[in-house]
Length: 163
Image 1 (spheres, rainbow, N blue to C red):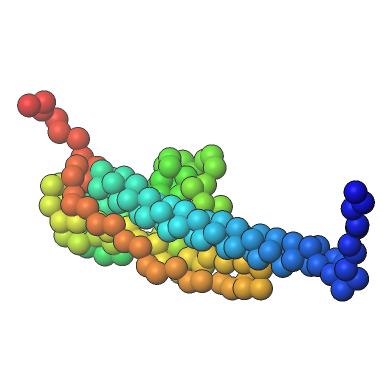
Image 2 (cartoon, rainbow, N blue to C red; image 1 turned 180 degrees about the horizontal axis):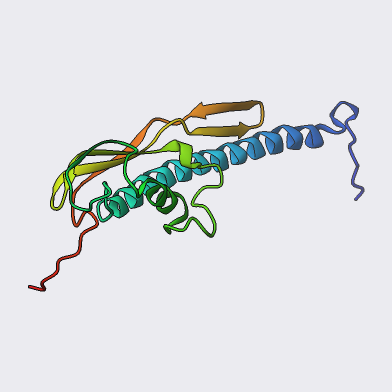
């Protein structure tokens, strides 16, 4: 029995063309998912920066005399330390940043009747721009303001007597 080889001239290269369309769509979707995951990471990192900055600020002096009630924005001797702690995770401002594009100018500290065990301190991130890169869609997204507020704890004072 003989088998015949059928060669249809109109379909040469059809498989290659189909693969090109499917593969390009697949890889564009894969890049879009990766970019979305990076945007979500950026959101979580900004929330973390405000959280750790506020927790650190609640234990730092807001005025030259620790424990004095303080109200204001970006005031006091600890502003640079708080910004460094939010960005680097330490008051000295050394080591790798939480996010490479987060700058001290994006961090704001606000005190409201802040003192020992009273008032509140808020640390916020504003004006942060995220660069979204998806094939065919490249744009800069201004992230919304992020803010964390905690109540005053030791306000930079240490108890002389132990309970």
